[in-house]
Image (cartoon, rainbow, N blue to C red; front, side, top):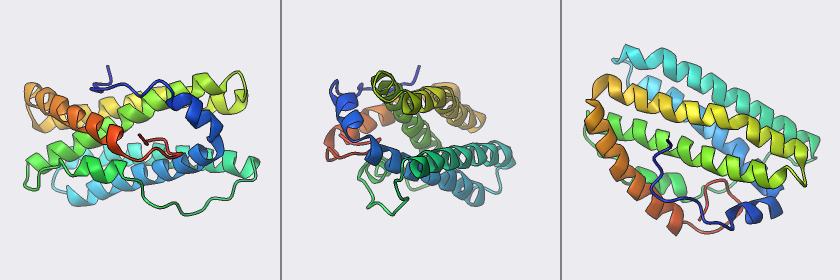
Length: 194
């Protein structure tokens, strides 16, 4: 369903649980970046009106999640602070072609794969947290549907402009690239780390 070429390594959830405060902070940054990316695409592709409302809706939902995670950080006494950029998103964007319309397709599908990986990781994290930190486990379990919906939305937006067979073929190529990136980035307390 999520078109990931490689599942997350089996010990990631245990590592994440051991570093849950840091993962929560990183998650807040991920939601903020996801909202910013959606808004940025609205500005970049103003001549494509079919993108404007769906991306605006997506950005608002990402910001709502950002606020929800900020609230959890506050409840736990964890200050929201700057984090150095991880290598995941930059690594993914290396595969984005530079010329249009291929750039649009690749940007939409890269966003889709980020959402897919987030969905997979949140499911693993939520399941591992439930026995030891039920409140946080429920937060992550509750976000799964939105992450999966965001994945599908980006793919559907790509299919507005490109034949579905072209979209699926490029998604498969980018998924292989995403698997290589997720396997090569440094292991650190991040939602999208190696």
